[in-house]
Length: 308
Image 1: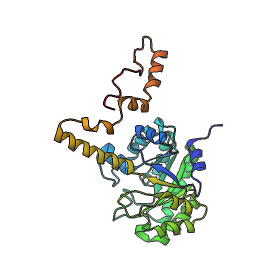
Image 2: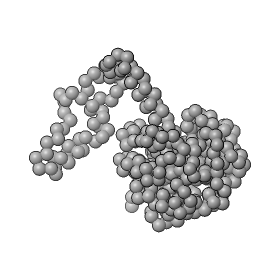
Image 3: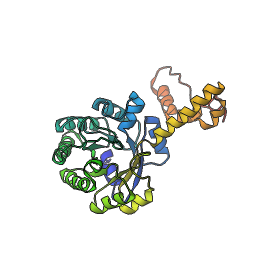
Image 4: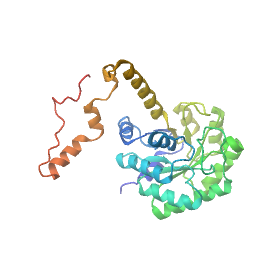
C-alpha cells in the first residue's frame, strides 16, 4: 500500500536525521530541489507574502492565498511539502478549517505557531504570543481536523523564546507534544547552546531547526543538528534570497549594457527549462490524445542551447 505524503514525512523526520529541507518559491524550484536529491521541500509564508504579493511578513496574506500557493507547489512535485500555516489564521475554529484546506490541497505537513493573530516574522522584534493553554487547544483542534479530513504532519512552532524566555519555550513544547503535535519547531533560538539545550530537554521528540539568514539564530552546519538529535533543518528563504540577488545583478547589468549576452552561461538553456517543466511528457500526450496534435518534440537542431 502506498504511503501518504504525511506518512513519508513521519518516516523521514526521525530524531537525529537532520534532513535538509529547502524553501521553494515555486513549482520549478521544487523540481530543481528534487533533482538535487532533497527528500522534502518547504513553502515559506514570508516568501509567499513577498514573491506573490509584494508584501511584508506581518500577517497580511490570507489562509486561502497560502493554501493556494502551497497547493500549487504540492501538486507539481512528488516530494512531500511542508507549508507555513502561520497562526492558523485565527482561533481554534479557524485552525480546523485551515488544516482541512491544506490537507485537501495535497500538502504533507504544516507548522502552526503560537503568536497572536496577525503574526510577525519570527525573527523581528515586537512579537506577542497567546496563552500556552490556548495554543495547545489549537493543536488539539488541528488533530481533530486531521481526523476529519485526512492525514497531515503537524508541527508546533514556538515563538515564545523571544517573549517569555528559553525555559518557557521548552515547557510550551512539552505541552504541544501532549496536545498531539508530531514535531516541535523552536523559532529564533539565540545561540548554539540553546539549540543543544532544547534537544536535551526533549529527548525523542522530532525537532525542526530554522536556519534562516540574517536573523536571531546562528547559522550552524547540519552535522551539528544531527549530533544533537534534530529531525530536520529548514532553509526557508535561502533560495529566494539568492534568486533576488542574482535578478538584481542581471537587471542592473542589462540596464548598463543593453544586452544579456554576458549572462548566457549563467542561465538555464531552453532545453534545460523544458526538461524541468516536463515538455516532452505533454508532447507525448498531445500525440496520443489530441486529433492532429502538433506540439513539436524536443529534437537536435532546435535553437535550445544557443550560447552554451
